[in-house]
Amino acid sequence: MKAARADGALLAGVCAGIARVFDWNAWVLRALFVIFLLIKTLWAIAAYAALAMVFYLLERDRPGHPKSGRELVSPELAGRGRRISDLEKRFEELERRP
Image (cartoon, rainbow, N blue to C red; front, side, top):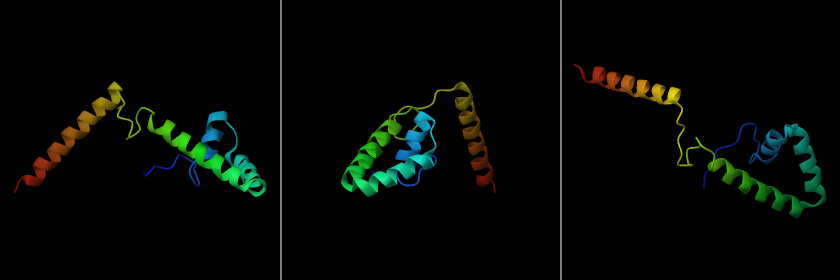
């Protein structure tokens, strides 16, 4: 299972994800997590692992994610995709010409 890092993630993106959801500072959450890690090591590791899995599953089910099975259906993006594929075909034709 290979997961892409979330924006602003240092390890698994748990603190960055929580900070993004609640509009908090990620570095403050990271500092609090380190304190929690020093006080209750096993609980901190278990909580971080559980939250990492939750964030991974939520991110995977989000529309537009490569593994979600759902694609963006914006007309603007669909039009851009068609234009890009047309340009790719033209370049391939130009490369085949002697």
